[in-house]
Image: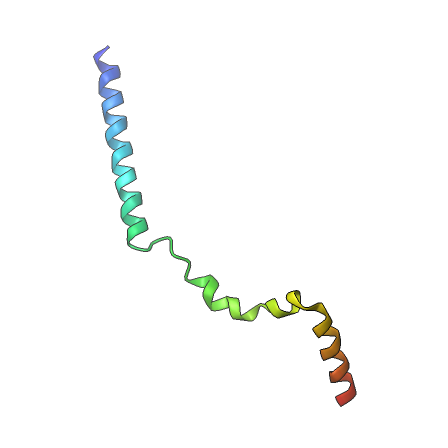
Length: 65
């Protein structure tokens, strides 16, 4: 019966250590997203917002050619 108490104690200590490591990683910025903001400018959000503007822009390009 004493082995069960020992295993429960050890598992709780290990869980607390992992929780502390996770909290430390979050506070130090380990999980910050550095990639998405640099690529966000490559996506055309304007085209999704106003589809009529796309048609007008395409017509203007054809007239200039």
